[in-house]
Length: 627
Image (cartoon, rainbow, N blue to C red; front, side, top):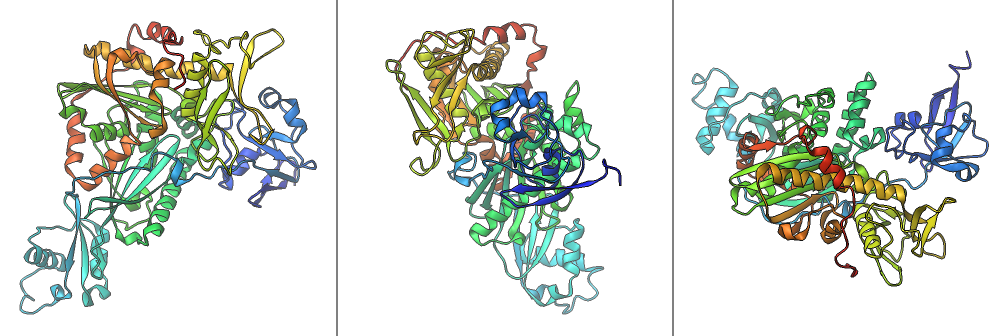
């Protein structure tokens, strides 16, 4: 056997999983084969430096690469840290993946939705007594069983049903069915989708919000119109890149890329559905419909459709109107004929998640001017009222969700989510997600980053151009006297296991993201002729923990003189999905909205680049008080 084809054993800690890998495979490639999630913002291309692993001293790995020296430094390398995407296995290897990410239901933000909903679902259960199968005197009145049962259902319930779904017909043909009461799942557009043995009136539904970064699943009682439970997790596709461009590139570059991405998201959704059912002691056969929202890339990958078309001009979605699928065709592990409704998309950049947010807020039914801002890896903006809606997408990047930030992390236990700095003493105050008495800070999430930069601006630590003010206390400068970082939480002294700071490059990332949002708002106002906004609705990545006043301070939102009121909602897209699950009228409304929303492609606007460049600077500080 040649050296190249020789197998080498690699063991991962703390899981204990092992794999016989081909010599020359990277740790990142091997981890993906074992479905071990290693954080990566660049999809394993050696750009982000986030896929750190700790190699044991006797591990046989390729020499340290230039990328590793630049991204993690010689000090960390001396301790045994390597980048998984750069380290090739040359012999037996044991590595530890530090700080394994476990996402909790309570801290995703997306999953905490409350409220009442109107109920007129697309599906219902028809309970039919076993006498429906009795032949009696009608032996010659019907040509087949389907015709007979359809007529019996009509006589029994007044519902004129039909059978088109093969799996429902197979259910009907089972011998055991004929001796018991049955529950027929009737979908108003697809007919009978399943026949369930027994008198089971429980009718559950699933609403799913697939984000580029996170996934949220809501289990609802369709008959009662309530949310029973919900679970959220990190989108497992993140290992192949933080943004949709990286996911599209992976699908294009790998022969089985779309299959890998599709499998990852379906496995995660099935697991989350399982958690939901376990929490309420429900069963798979109780689920009668699924409704899904997401951006165009996430929706196409969910359905197993290659997203190639979304990565090339003119960036058209594969379809805006094909919205209903069978669970078995998607891979959802419930009754095979169950309908899966996927929200239509507005454009190649603005998807079903934005439509969900619109449905949840109903700006098209109101006189007041509403601005909806869905903050995430891709920022979507909708502006208008019943007279018309304008929408656009702005490339905010993943910085607002904690990525591409030195000490950034998602909203999870141990994340700093709230920061304030006393402008007179420069003392830093912060709050953590989770029990702050039991856990130490692990990093800083999106809302905390916005707070930190706003507080640093008010304290004079950051200048209008984004430079750190070297004359202020706490600013750490390099050999040339250029300010490089400001420490929020020092390492040690029982406050943190590692130093948590805001760097000059972190500020640059936030400037790029906030400029994208502000430019999008200005361009929508200009195109629509709207000069004043009655209500701003913030939804998406930050949830209710977001301090919108700090977004104004850094120039992510326009000056407060342009708007009256700000509402921060947990997850507008998820609310819209739940509404469409529980009341069918909202599905018709999404289709009607497609032809009413005017999409503005910012990059094609002649003054976009000038406006964007002008929005990079931070606005002057008007109020230095702690917020």
